Amino acid sequence: MSAATIGVQGHCAHCGSTLLLKPWQLNAIAINEAFTCCHCEKALQLNDPQQIKRFKSLDSLAWLRASTLVMVCTALLVALVLEWVGILSVVEQLNFSLLAIFVYFIVMRFARHRHHMTLTLEAAKAHVN
Image 1 (cartoon, helix red, strand yellow):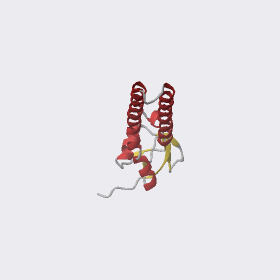
Image 2: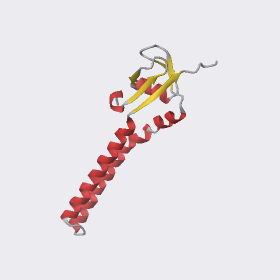
Image 3: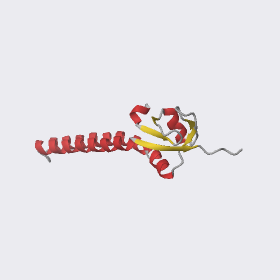
Image 4: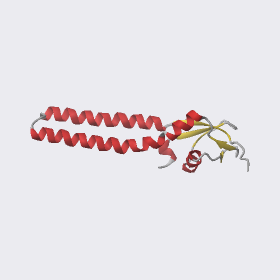
């Protein structure tokens, strides 16, 4: 997954620039490692606990699309079988199917909205050896 599709940006505390974070920078944030700003060449790190928690929540959102797709496909199959058996009419089956697809698009919109964030990157703490 490229950084453009993820939509995570970083705001440098040194130079004040906002940059689209590359996958290797996102990996550095995930393992709590410092990396250099491409504008001012200073070491940056994510230190805010709330932003760290929100960044870590991106992992759970990755499974959301697949699980929602499975749920919608299952709902469509159940509606089709219920219509075939005679429990639902064709119109009810169509309404049920449209509702399931609508829920899928709402969930995906929510997931895309949660993926776009700007992290405030602070000066990296010096490591003591």
